[in-house]
Length: 222
Image 1 (spheres, rainbow, N blue to C red):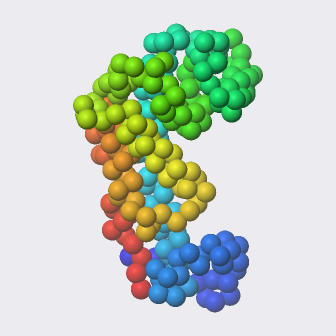
Image 2 (cartoon, rainbow, N blue to C red):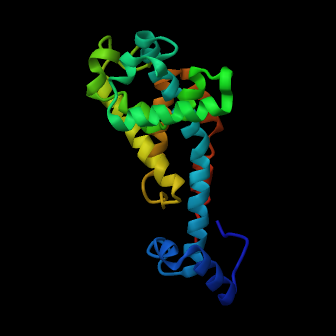
Image 3 (spheres, rainbow, N blue to C red):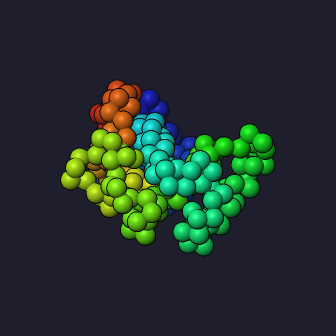
């Protein structure tokens, strides 16, 4: 795709200075040293990230709600105030839970519910609940209660690894990292798989809404 703009040198220099030469330099090898094409690749990379946002949002929300199920099953709806649950957590997770409850309480007052806490906690908090440290308390009966469409060969650890991969990829996108040459289609398949573990119909919708392949096909070229 030929992007519908062409910067005169002075304008390009201003843009490069604003975005930082080091950031745009990441794209120069793929652009064959062409600075204009490097800028086009930078913009295209941002559009790739944008196209992944909705599928990742679906997958993250599905995973949070799935992991919450064994937590509620063991520690009930007010698990976030249950000392038996809180005492299982390492200090950093206790602090995050306390801070999240305080923040959400301030926003919602008497209307505070576990849904606010689920959304307020980081994805890393939920991924951590899938480590071996919680096998006895949360995963003794396997993963199917939380992820009903998991293949029988999938383990708590294999799902945790998928979630952690998505978490790291999401964080890279949030920090505007280059992903165009890091197999975005493979990352997308991981995201879709995670959604499908929780709900096949939500997985279908996520795939229907995806624009990733269209954006990939629009890669700018000289």
